[in-house]
Each structure stands twice: as structure tokens, then as C-alpha cells.
Length: 233
View 1 (cartoon, rainbow, N blue to C red):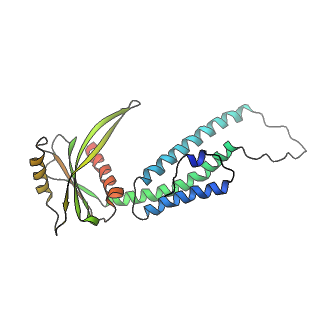
View 2: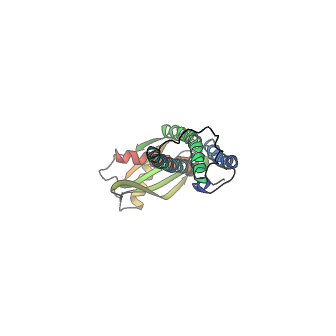
View 3: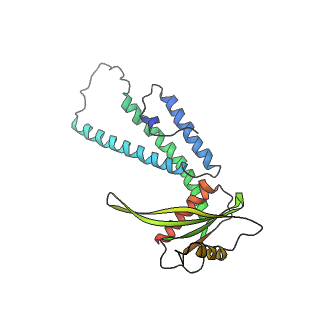
């Protein structure tokens, strides 16, 4: 897969069209993966790159605006001035201006897929939700492999630059094969309580979906995002 990074924009180049083709081809590979129902890490990478380019462009245009205010317009001349070729730095910003809407269109496609997956996944509590929900379990089916993934989760607070974030980590503790019917979620929870007595009344959630999408690249990341929202509400 083609690498899409800031280097494609900041590395010097002589041929604008060639560099645009390289970037466009890389973005096209990302959208091709979206069309194969694969979300991560591509969607995160596109969003991060888009935000970086927007910030670079905004800072450049803010500085350029200040310089324009300080400089008087040139006096009118009857002699035609020779055309001055764009400097490498300005070529970079021209490339960024061209790429931003292309990236935005790709992100929109990925976001539409994310919303579709999220709308077709339901998380329900297995039994009553205890007061302590910072640790627990989530059961996630993978229809393609006829497997039920049993994950233990833990949340923690991260403080960075004065802002507080809640993080979610998961570890797979068990996989169950599909033999005609799924193991009942209540049965799985009972086994977990016996196997891991340090959580005598664990918060346990079951994911329900009919989607036969890739587990690692799509189902699991959306489930984790949905679980985090549920725990934070």
C-alpha cells in the first residue's frame, strides 16, 4: 500500500503533476480499503494528516496576511514584468490547497462507513450493570470466522497538556467457536467470574450485529468506541 504522509508534501519536487498523482494514488488506496469495509487504521491516518495540513496552511495564511498588511502595493508600470516562477515553499502550499478537498472526500467516505457500522452494532449489558465499570468484559462476535471474542477491558485517565482523557484498553482472554449456536452471554459471564475471581461482579457487555465485516480493522474498533461512549455517559 502506498505511504501517505507529510513527507509527500514537504519533500522538494520539480513536477507538480507527478506529486499530485502520487498523493492521489495513495488516497485512492485508502478509499479502496473503505470499499472493502476496512476502516482502521486508514480512517485515523487520513484524519490526522488532514488536520496537520489544515494547521500548516492556516498558520501560513495567517503569517502571509500580516505581511500583506505591512507591504504597500507596487507602483503601476507600463513595462511587462517577467513571470517569476513559484518558489518551492509556495509550491508546497499550493499542493496542500489542492490535496485538502481530496482528503476531505476520502474522509467523508470513511466516516459514512463508520456511521453505518456503528448503527448496526448494539451493545447490551449482560445482567445488571454494577457501580464499578472501570473494568469488565465485552463479548464480540466475528461471523466471518465463526468466533466469539471475549475481551477484558480497563479504563484509565490520561492527563496531557492540562486536558483529561479517558483511555480504554482491551485484552482477549477467551475465544469460543460457533457450533450451531453461540454460547449464552450469561454462561460466559458465569465462567469469567469463576476464572477471574478478582472481579466478582464484573460489568459485562455483549455486542450484537449481523455485519460480516473484518473484525480487527472494523468491528472491534467501532465496538471499543461505542463501549467508551457507553461508559462515559
